[in-house]
Amino acid sequence: MELLQLHYFLTVARLEHMTEAARMLHVTQSSLSKTIQRLEEDVGVPLFDRTGRKLRLNEYGSKFLTRAERALFELEQGRQELRDLSDLDHDVLELVVTTASTLPYILRKFRNKHPHIQFHVEMLTTEEAAVLLHRGEVDFCLSSPPIEGDDIEYEIVHVTPIFVAVPQGHRLAGGSSVRLTEIQDEEFVGVKRGYRTRDLVDAVCRTAGFLPKYVYEGNEPARVNALVEAGIGIGFIPGTAVNPREHIHYLRVEDHELVMEIALWWKRGRYISRAAQQFRGVVEQYFNSLSSEGYVKPAHEDSDSGQV
Image (cartoon, rainbow, N blue to C red; front, side, top):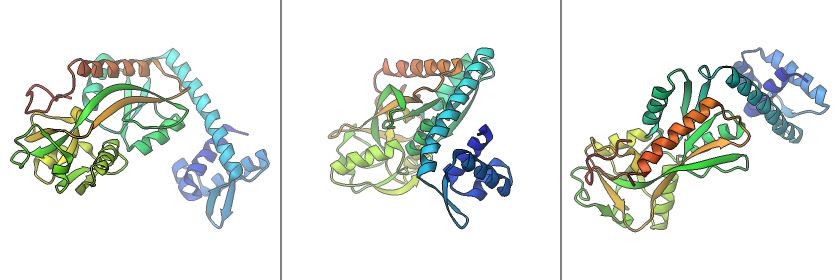
């Protein structure tokens, strides 16, 4: 059994499509098929059910996939540990986030402290981030709970309220708080299902007897502020995304607890490089500075707040 066979098997198992797997691996389909066939001969059982050109991971393949992922994960951790021991400055952090409102400030602080360390960041839904965490393909995920799994660990780094954001001139813009029943007939802008803020807000609104009517649902949380400011609809904005420079009025929710926890997640057993440890320290320091000031206040309550 060869490492190349395992790498090829993982790709085919995840895609369940030989042509797409060959394209991703930059090999011919016939070469990939032969490699998978040799692997099946080595293990002594078929790993896929084949119907024409379609592949489906069978019971044998599903069990072998778990072992193969674990084996390659451990080998990658060994490689990472050796590289870390030899050279910190050339390490690359792999990060995934489900909310980006605080990310520019965290990355700026990290780059100022460690200018030679590179990083790669992806913005994903909670479900997409969980897949990469379980596979051990990222160092950290900055997200809101829940991400479930016995192989996942986390640290709550901040708790922030979620405000109702309305444009200046809105009928509610003169107040400081609002009951959810007062906005049930409004039109909303927000992110798509799968983002933690959206899922949390929908669940709380459901307990109040309604579901928000969305006229815009997107993949870019930062765009929600601009759409509220433009008067397209009202929205739910975490305190970490409050921006006093925008013409938006922020209201606290009176009758329901609407807060969002922000956590740093990592795969249990994944080697935490020195670069990753440095990043974790910057994240903790940044959110500790926010927590020491209390909840982020809406712009109309404190013009110096919301710079996160």
